Image (tube, rainbow, N blue to C red; front, side):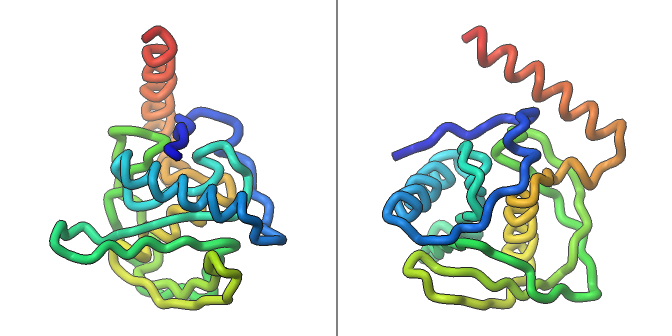
Length: 172
């Protein structure tokens, strides 16, 4: 089932999400809904707070090649275990901040640990777009948006555009 994506500014996007204590069928269903919502948007990552659920759950799939096999990942309680000294700048966007993009600098590689949808502990090294995406989504779980890395002027300009978009959406 497709979910509605919360648009910034919204207080739910600034709150830290609670750790998932038990993998219930409801949470597994939510993960499936989030993947469907992400693919439909279309996007490459989505965090539970973006659909109004303050739980530490993210989904991502950074396979962009049409001919390649999709690689949907569901991560409960993801955390960055290690990050490279090397940093990389990447132009980021966000489904909660539609049509707005900005350069953000992050570690180039990260090692991430999480629980999969069966409750098994997993660990993997990510780089390139996957590293950017997983860090961006984990930020959402900590109440942080990519625009929080920008200077105050640029951040305010994007926030004003989003307020205007929300007013227009409410009218239609």
